Length: 124
Image (tube, rainbow, N blue to C red; front, side, top):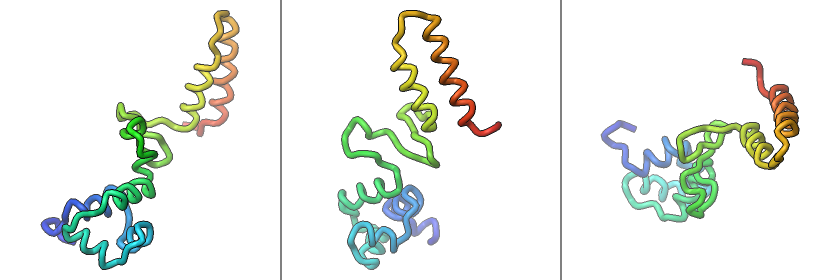
């Protein structure tokens, strides 16, 4: 498709969600013809847009709390623009669970988690 023929719907479907016409038709329970009409400029129903975002991992949940979170390339994109790995999320949870007054105990647990995570991380 030529640049001057691209509609917002086409850009959303093809470039933002990375879905083909056939994939979009299948997940939205529509015909290929209907999806082509959307690409030509006909409005996409809200529920179909949401399905497309969910399938392409652009939307995690429809609640406002998850509105600015996305999954891209196996990482969670935070509202701050930062990308975090599953290991980083687990580390953060571990740090929150420690909650110890005794600093020596905290440091011991932190080192334990750090060593375990170092084993999980690929060599850089």
